[in-house]
Amino acid sequence: MEHFIGFIKHIVIPFLLLITLSLIVILLFKRIRYQYTLPFRHHITRKSEIFLTEITLSSPEKNILKYKIAQFKKEIPIHKNWCKEMLIDDMIRMKSNLKGKSAKNILSIYKQLDLNHYSASLIRDFRKYKKCTGFYHFQALGYKPGVSLLKPYIMHKSRIIQSNANISYLALSKGDWQALDKISVKVSPITTIKVMDVLHSENIPIPKDIDLWIESKNKAILKLAVMAMVFYNYRNKSAEIIKLLHHPHKALRNDVIIAIRDLYLNEAEEDLLSIYQKETMNLQLEIIETLSVIGSEKTIEFLKNEIPKQEIKDIKLKMVYCYDKLDPAGIDILGSQDLDTQKMINHIRKVEL
Image (cartoon, rainbow, N blue to C red):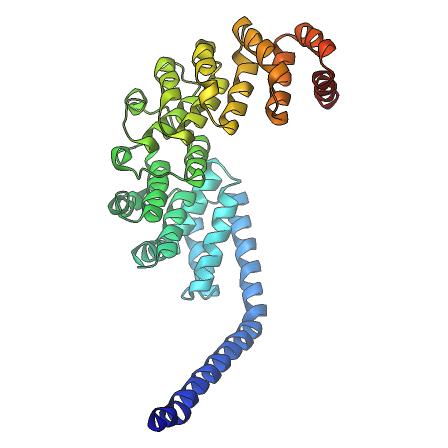
């Protein structure tokens, strides 16, 4: 035991202290070095912004552009990764606000500075966040040759890598959903938002196989099918959309209820009324919201019976809102018979003003 304590005291503790001190020294050195080089970095950043702005606004001829890029390359530390990252970030920011020839100039600069090779090296990196950064570079700058490098990752075992690769592939291929059948079952809200953003920003035409998507057994594909149909205002498969109200997956049913509202699928009214009592409170609120858009006399009759006996305030308020949308005169009669309902009517109409 004494030997072990001596080992801890004379070997382990000094070693840990040495490691700790070394880390402190390294961190301090890095901080000092960063502060020392900060003015230079700011200078290069400013030079980059001026150069990119001048090129995009003047739109020089191909040979002149090539010459200016070569000169600029000599004036900056392009071999440094921080410089490459700064340039790419500036290009992405500028390209998002440009169209036509100016946007193409940004892509030309990206390639002539060999920054596409840097982005490719990120994709080949073993770290997930590096790979995803490389995917984003290709996507944001519209580097279409990068599609071949993305393809091996659209079926990747990592859901994060697969998701980001698919989104970038979708943007660069302008709607080639070849990996759709094997996309991960779990699609996060962020992934869905990214997909819809790509559809909007890239003006991707309606997918050829969208009618097949809605028949899929994969929840992720069904979710994307419903979202895409709303985006393209595609009502040809309204019966299939309505059928999904009975799907076992709660989150998908929620998306379907919202889609019915956005697509004005009046024929879904009876199905919504039939499933109302079986659903959770959150979905009941969504159903009532949808019925306020597509509801008819059937919904009014339902509300007339439900409002007086409803004890949950949030649901009752939503029901009163729905009734007021469909039949303002009818809800006034109901309000005259119940003070609580009348207060809700007054609140709703005051908010709308």
